[in-house]
Length: 264
Picture 1 (cartoon, rainbow, N blue to C red):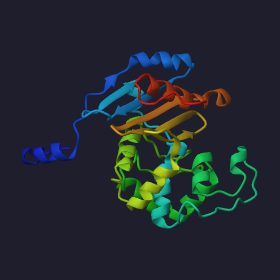
Picture 2 (picture 1 turned 180 degrees about the vertical axis):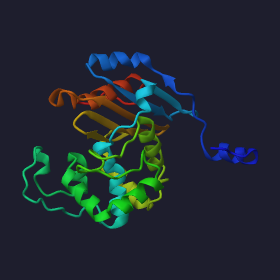
Picture 3 (picture 1 turned 30 degrees about the horizontal axis):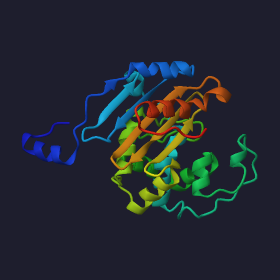
Picture 4 (picture 1 turned 180 degrees about the horizontal axis):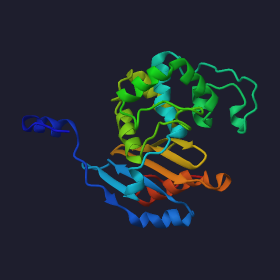
């Protein structure tokens, strides 16, 4: 993007200056320790200057289906479109037995986010429609911004793709309530993203899995600033690999003092 010279001081005032991404090849030991192949991007904003830390930069720039990490923006779309009113609205189970027991009961927004109840969000997608979904995706500049699909849920099987860097760009806007949605809707989404909290920190995140690779994205809030993260790994062994998403990320965040040791 071309920025005229007379606008440059304004640009500096509005947008923080980010450090050049640092390639943390040493984090390969963490991935190797879990026998995992993947990438992670960490943006540490606890100091005045952001630190951008990356393991496997090429993969960090590659787009993958967002899978259930898409529930974060998808919830914003649903709230804006009126497909869901608030966190108390009940979505009644259709009686179809699904492979994950946590999906086989009535849901509200919080439980649907926590258990990744795909059927609830498939209803949101139906209510929103493809044309409106594409408009929302373009408005927030979300990855490929393409909600088309020939097989099923477009965030899992379709043409929507997003990179680890793009995940963090989106999360940073949500953190600041800087997305083109009502502020109370953005705050609600952040509330249902809470994973764990301590006296002076809050961990917010969302996992995702498309059958081949898995995500964990989110951030840790500290009084001195947030630490954003976006990890994806290959998951050839569903049973053994899915837990590695959180395990690897937690180990890396703890290694830079961005998170205390959590109870497993």
